[in-house]
Image (cartoon, rainbow, N blue to C red):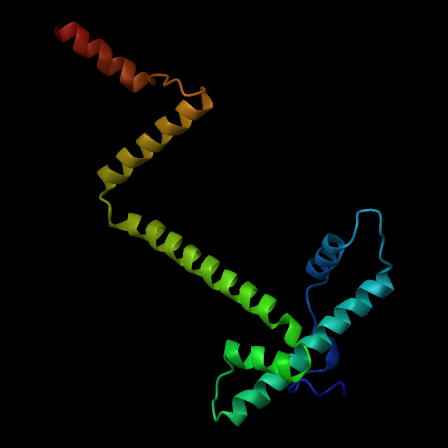
Length: 160
């Protein structure tokens, strides 16, 4: 592949994060296996080339369907066309897992953002409740009264 084959970028500009790739490589191998730096660099280059190959084929599949946006189905079809059909099921499962996790993350952020609708008093009360729960967990489930609670208890008993 020519260094300028990647849409206006030189080959050096298109890469994957080295630290992340090194971590992935090490996780896939037994603990007692070491990988030479040159071998790591070669594996990273192979990954970049594989991504370029799949992207290019996905684009061709997309164009044949007169579409302008590459969809997951186009990537799966590209894998089959390129002879990687045996991986389609596993790739699809990973894609479904990614969709599920992304959906959960967005639901969590909606819940976090919905807290902005609380009044200041409600937020303070919720904060105190969460502090109390955390203290209870830290004390092995035993609720330890805080100074404010002690004062309230004392005032109530003095009034009786």
